Image: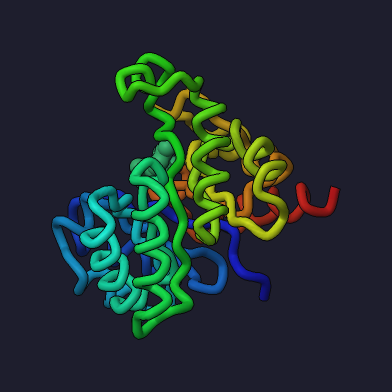
Amino acid sequence: MQDPRVIVALDYDNKDTAMAFIDKLDPTLCKLKVGKEMFTLFGPEFVKEIIAKGFDVFLDLKFHDIPNTVAKACKAAAELGVWMVNVHASGGLPMMQAAKEAIANSANPSTKLIAVTVLTSMDQEDLKLLGSRYNPLEAVASLAAAAKECGLHGVVCSPLEASTVRKIAGDDFMIITPGVRPAGAATSDQKRVKTPAEAIKAGATALVIGRPVTGSDNPALAVKTILQQIEEALNN
Ligand code: C5P
């Protein structure tokens, strides 16, 4: 079985509900993403429980702090046994390098480390506030190049930016994209969306998808349908 390219975003405020949902999924067909809300509510124990069920976990805590602090947080995440953890590329080169070194020297050095480029909620005005002269796409390109230079495994970006990042960073670089909606699914509050096939064709390695799966009556079937759409895109 190929490495699953679907990462289901768990955005639950109730652990029992989350566990009942997870029990409907197959760890060979998808990975799981735990973000700030669930980690704050249920902590490392929750992460360990879902790892024990066989799932690869993407711990989406988007660390952004001084290099020493981020390095220690990344080491702790790696030693929790997660598959992947992330930092903000805007934390700078020394921060990304320190994070990478800390994982390499941890008890779980194979943990993947990726960087968030520009949050899709940010526009040019927000970037101006940071003193940046770049538009969002230029900022994504610059930050992706920085992440690559630091030896990170990849980045998180919008599917609309994936093809630009793929050109800059080459084939051996993970591009993880949220903002994906299967054809015909409700877009909810995601404004700039692409379908799984479009995201994969643009160069995405794996897709973060939440509500189209968590809100489905048959989550396992929802995952299989998305995997089929990905397969078709890869074969076309
Ligand atoms: O339900 P939905 O598919 O919109 O969930 C997407 C997940 O990806 C959520 O956990 C959300 O926080 C996250 N995310 C996002 N856009 C980003 C970064 C993360 O939607 N730019």
